[in-house]
Image (cartoon, rainbow, N blue to C red):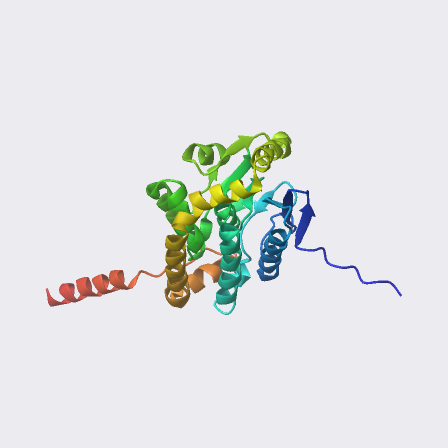
Length: 278
């Protein structure tokens, strides 16, 4: 008898002493389905339990993507509540962690992938990296980015990225203050290593306290805003016809057929009635 081949783990964890590397292992685009999100959450918990680990590095397998986002099928109404719960549990774990977090980004960093990077304390990117929140093109919006992105760049630019769904390159992301370091792809590991060494050279206790002072002051406000974004997503967005249409169109590889919103429909009906009376 031949043993059945085992599926590769969707998440790889490498202990590097004072740091832990967590790799999204679903190349080429490292799309994150619900099991992958759960595995990422477990990886954060494992790093937290190791007293030697001071820093968690997130990266994606291969050269094409950090992550192109969450699995489109998990956005369907039957799966979306669980996906949102598991994904936001991961995001909260990264934000609350005692460890410094760094996203090392190659290629595409989109949707939920970009939201994971936003939750990290730092982003180091190759010069070919692309950042974007394309959910609007699928009839959705990114709850985590809606909360975190306006805190990292200007509100107007955050709105532009979320409402257009267009991507920006690494250099523009650096100029906006979204990315800490940009380097050639061949140098990315070295630059990330130097950046991480600068963090872990200091007292681990003081490093954690300094991070807490900077980031945790706004944690309560972030939690309130994230809960409201979750409510809007689950109670309003998932009931919208266009949310279902956007996902269906993507899966069926066709252009979506958006409906006018309720206000526009009432205005249209009003104009029609006026025309009849005249």
